[in-house]
Length: 471
Image (cartoon, rainbow, N blue to C red):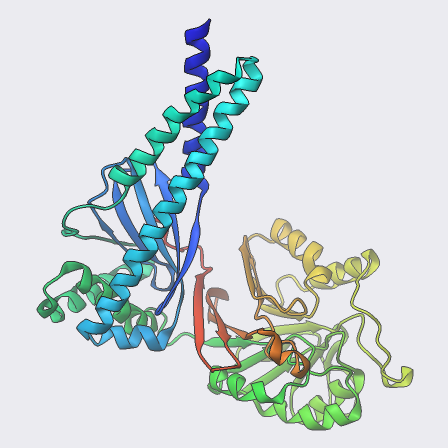
């Protein structure tokens, strides 16, 4: 019985350590962006670098544990990446040193996480078996096993040469061609790792634009909250294209705010708007009269206050919008109606949305909570009808791509409003790349701009069903 207990306690510690190894992740900021580090057990040992922004990866040997040490680039500072792409040895060495330090730090934390998990697993088994407490000392065995495996087998060792490239979908030829070209032109650096850093930077700076070149782009922004200082960022992002603005342009929608912000109607080739809970009927009419495409559940708001069709064609896209049920009204003195939505309002929106099946490509609605049941129903009832839903309200960037619906929240264009500029919130917006006919959202770039120093990062999310995964 005692040998059985010993085996069970050690096995529990080993399995708990494996669980920690499998699930422990860590994000680190480098000068060129942010990376996420993780481990995928039960693969041929490799150091795996994957870049979703260009659906491209490179894999090195040097890992003797049957697991992949996975480095995924989560966000990129494009200006810094472009500087690395020039091949300047000093810049490349800085990035390489940062990456080396990030991996070393992750491995140290992984040792701590697996050791703690092994101890907890062994302790739990001691309790389950009602074994003597002294047998808890057996936890040292799995702790030492995992510490040694991570330090000596998982840590990359030796020359990182013979890289293996991988990519999926239509980006394969572009990605591989760009990498091969970068490697040839940077051969003077004399180190394979340096070559790959330059190749990565050039893929970001050049290859990304080629993969989606020529496809239409929609700029999605919301929650300006009167911060007119952020309008320049919107202009630069829109580049004359269509702007989708699902609400909260103002704080209360008063005539003064409306007169100041009606200028936004000139942003982009078309400015498509629907109200949020901080906007008003007065603002909506002012925008319509300035030429904005103002959408409501009753139809497009016209200059004379009447309503046109529910679905409006803008740039070849069929677009509809739903006013916030908490929109402020002039007749009520622009009173705050709160931000909550109830079940009846959700049901009303669901009936409205499902009634547009087969007639619409893009929908604007301010509150994600209002739209949630309807989106779930659409995915079930219309799995082959692709829909892009632009939302706002939460001030948090998000892309929810599941089934036939891609829901995009660009964050807060106004960094939470002029009263919040000192609180460290970034200016946020999104840019969706689409294929018009048949309609399909292909990719979404989530852009964040620090209002303090103007630095920007962007994360690309592929949403066309061809998102690359490590093979």
